[in-house]
Length: 70
Image 1 (cartoon, helix red, strand yellow):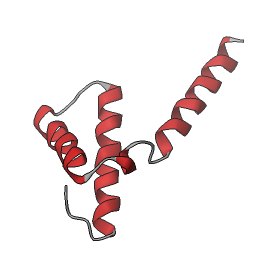
Image 2 (tube, rainbow, N blue to C red):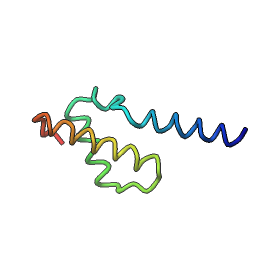
Image 3 (tube, rainbow, N blue to C red):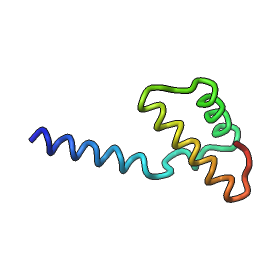
């Protein structure tokens, strides 16, 4: 039972992390500020590292579309 719960929890967490989520809705100034914060603070907690990685990916996605805000 515990194993099933852990597998389900992990799967849901991974699915939540895959999409663009709310980052694509942020304007250029907000995403640039969040990226700068990640660079300055160099996070070590797993949750913050994941968030900063998602921000980095959003910046890359925007760059591919010609938006060099961050």
